[in-house]
Length: 327
Image (tube, rainbow, N blue to C red; front, side):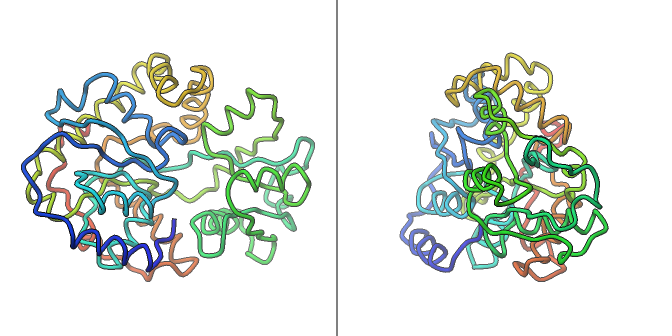
């Protein structure tokens, strides 16, 4: 998730080469991990049901990426009106000088399962002592999440062993080979692996200790915000209607998402149920929850990614949020 200076430099050069923003027109938007993780689920619904068009946004397609920093770069390098990215990526980009603003908040709370091997005794904080917890890399959000969990359990960082091992797949392989004791699995990866016969012991009590924080946010360039506020407002409204549809019609929503994600509807349905068991309204309608934003900022600060406090007025512009559309 961390945005490097090389990425920042490349994106700023791309931004400098862009021509002035034209009037609202058909365009793709960028969504982190679209088609693979559940952040993009409402966009699949909005495209299928015509909610963007209904709201007045001419969205022609969804571009994806493997991480927040790449999503920011993709938006900056093309005439793209909107992107949903990880909040840490948005914060890092703005700190680097990118002319962008956060205009909506998309997800907040826990959505990934914490698991161990079947039969492993991990029932409370005392059992957590001495265990090996996997995260992606130093100064990453996954490291910050586990540090927050350890603190919430009443333990100190030295009471556990933190192991940097790479992506989710590497963590699961390490878990299966008894090289670590606790791994993170996001949806729908967990439900897909379970359907394929994988056997993990889920640790809901540990997931419940995850600090409350914002996950992904909507961002736009300052120029696009000034030139096409109605287009951006319509994108947010179209997504918000899709979120309401997901909560009101979960089975039909799962079928739509499954077609777009090329997965079985039962897998997507299970993924939605598991996420809602952890955070009932993980997908938000767009309104900004500053408690959740502060939660992520606090976790980022715990691993040295930002200094506190963050003045959100330098990062957020709520002018395109329609109170009716986001309720």
